[in-house]
Image (cartoon, rainbow, N blue to C red):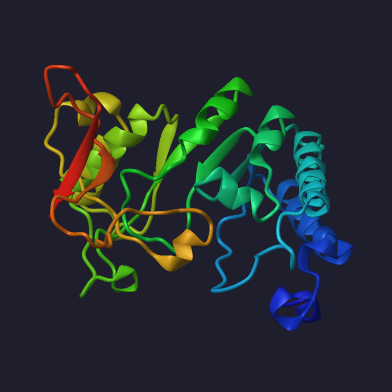
Length: 279
């Protein structure tokens, strides 16, 4: 963004609709995969998180803008896979919901169907709170149909001031186990996490060892949490159930907040539990 400040959306520019921006991003990508001994490239589309407006195009995911972005991903993918040193892998960090991606011109389903990606990582940077129910199921089938992988992203806070808490709190091993178990139940191929204390101590190594194995988390103690609403996450369709507003008439009203529990919790061997608030 620093090279062409006049093209940034907040400055009235056309951003990715301007060919100069796309060429700059492509040239940076090409330099990375051709001048350095790396195995591939991970395109990060979910790092952008403005307070208002769109991230890549002033008018969002119109048909023309979506075609522009798909063509750019196609161009990068072909470049990475035909580099002189041998083909590299291509992945993308995307927003958790399909509609949230489409609103920005990111047609992930088409990228996968064309074989442009080897893996995807659903994540929203602006939402740092661990969410065992991140709604990325929509991408698992299309990815696996295209022989691509899906990696679940485990956020690094349990509570955060930005999401309405009174202070910051980090997840316990039991919190990580619960979220990891849910993600494995969604058929992810692996897990990401970030911002553990460095250098890694025994606790951090235990977390990484445990969450990386479906077998290790399956029978261990877990602590499930229900993540809170956050306006900036809602901007990309990433919605949450609490806090839940109760509207009159209050007597006999009931409100359901669904959440997933990747454990056998009843005789019917059910995997989904539902909280019902009665007021």
